[in-house]
Image 1: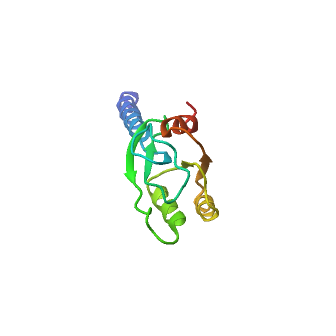
Image 2 (image 1 turned 90 degrees about the horizontal axis):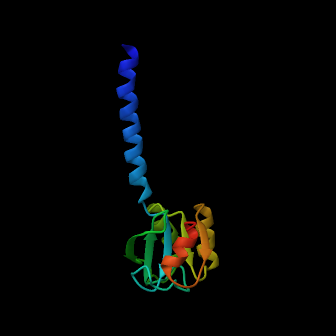
Image 3 (image 1 turned 60 degrees about the horizontal axis):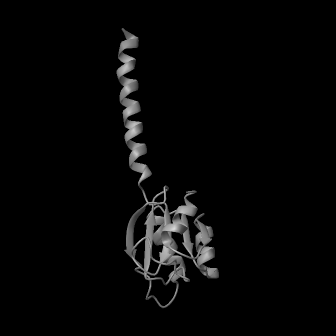
Length: 130
């Protein structure tokens, strides 16, 4: 009788785990500093004062395009962008170049940063291991 009660509990636990894993797979993981709002947009040469950030999941699939809210700030764009991306759950940021303050801000948040050229989609796919 006790074994029969455990089986439904195990099934429920497995179903909950599967559902949570499926939801987590689509979460943004990679941010690409981009010149446009599509996956085919070019990776920007800048990292903090870019027009857009494109968020890709861990499979390299575009999840969201966001206008950079810190593009026009006069000072401290790098640390503000790092905070913004960290709050979104981003672990990897890709851009053409990174300034010293941006690098320091990303390192202090234990975020990985990579340089790339070409399309945002190609850069995200490379970062996702595709």
